Amino acid sequence: MENWYGQVGNKDAISNLGKIKNNIDSGVFKAIQKAGITAILGNQDNVYEMNKIYQKRRDIVIEALSELGWKIPDVKSNILYVVKNS
Image (cartoon, rainbow, N blue to C red; front, side):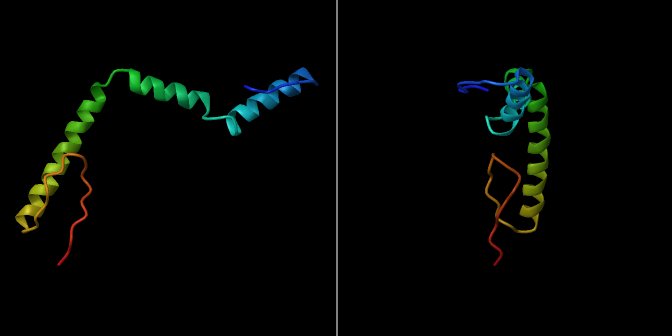
């Protein structure tokens, strides 16, 4: 319960209210924050492997659509394409 002033009353009730407020209206749930930090600062090997898988899938989509005569730009950022159908 950061920035709470004048906490007067039943110690247990105030403590429980602080837990509720912390999870409802005082920011992102701390477990989610810690999980995000761990994901960002932790081992990234799995991210590189997933990127390789998505790159391979993207390349398959580009090749298949190109064989159908579609002109697909070689975008390195994603597998989702919005193309003009004429």
